[in-house]
Amino acid sequence: MKTSTPPHRSLPFLQKASLLAGAGFLALAVGCNRDQVSHFRVPKEAPTAGSPMAAMGEAPAGMPLAEGDMPAPPRPSGQGSLKWSLPKGWSEATGEGMRYATFKSPVAGRNEATVVVLPGPAGGELANVNRWRGQIGLGPIDEAALAAARVVVKTKAGALNVYDFTSEGQTKSRMVAGLISTPDGNTWFLKLTGDAGPVAKAKPDFMRILESLRLD
Image 1 (cartoon, rainbow, N blue to C red):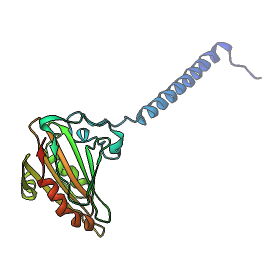
Image 2: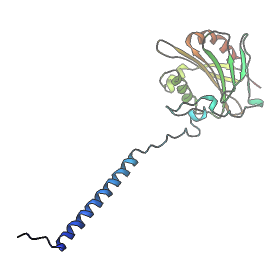
Image 3: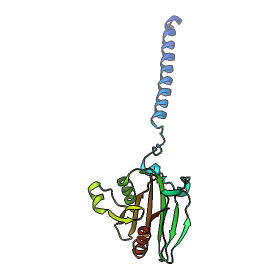
Image 4: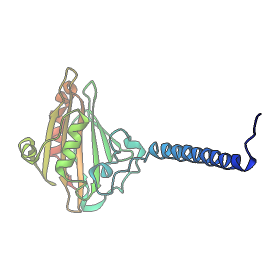
């Protein structure tokens, strides 16, 4: 003879099953939320004010930013402004974005000279020199190597620190760069960049430009 389970004994079992099922759904939901949080990406911070990258209008590594994307700083005028003389065959155009001016040499091949002026020390000499070196694939240097690489050119505007770097590898790039501080507190950067061959041919004239610097 078959006997059936009394109704009052099956009720706790159903309640336990419901509780276990609810707990399972809750754990699954929590697990999903955890997965979402673990995959949340925090955007990279922009350069902080006063850093050399911010001063020069550059973004962190992996976030390239063209000079034309940055607003131009106020153009200096009066006693602090630099003046120069261009050799025969060179032309000058008003710069755009961060550039104060752009020079075009008569030398064939990839080469270009630019002028940038920024307020204050603009991050400091060592930081800017290492940034320039990075632009042509060279590693950073320390203060001792900075002093060894520096050539001081005397101008009517004051002492101009000049650096000349050439990249490594089969296709070489070269950069000749000078920086000078003016009495109004601004820092001026004059750079000749391009392929090593054309830059070598344009350098003598570019050095004449640097030697001609004077205050307005």
